[in-house]
Length: 214
Image (tube, rainbow, N blue to C red; front, side, top):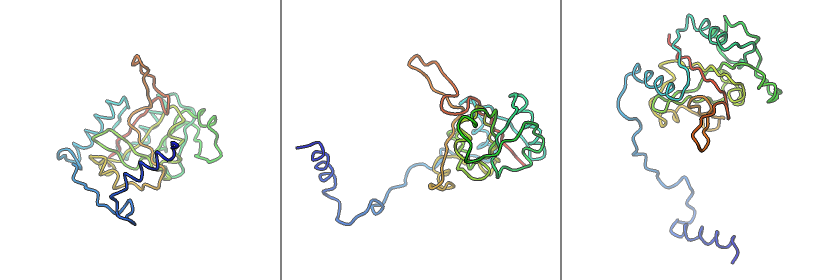
């Protein structure tokens, strides 16, 4: 008996009690797990998000709509950025005071060209307080997935409290699974067998999150 025959025999045994014609979506799936751990006010939810972002070594800033452009300008200047990548649908008010040369998000840009960009500024689709995770879905204000993965410095703006949810199940309800979702929990990092942490391996070395309130 070949390996193929062995695998197929195991599949047949596993499906022996499945009624003919039943699809994978037909059996009911219990959803009795906890959707959220505890009750929080909007302010507590935002505070928990900020706490977990900081634990992941992201740098958290609090800003207001009337001066967020000055905050972003200061963050870019502090990083020494000469160029900044801007998605086409980014709120223009956020970049109103920025000095660096703006690089558009273009499909023709190569990885080498994106790697030469100093910073990228994006919005987000949703942020999860319990896990300190920010999710991007490739919308016009967030741009293509690769622009948040290749440049070394990422400034992500989260509108609070509207874009902050407690848990992953709540976040999934807001997301379109057909879109290119990028889940970010702090700056990119990995550790070797001796637990020496190295940042910037699979994405930006520095993640700054602006919690933007009105």
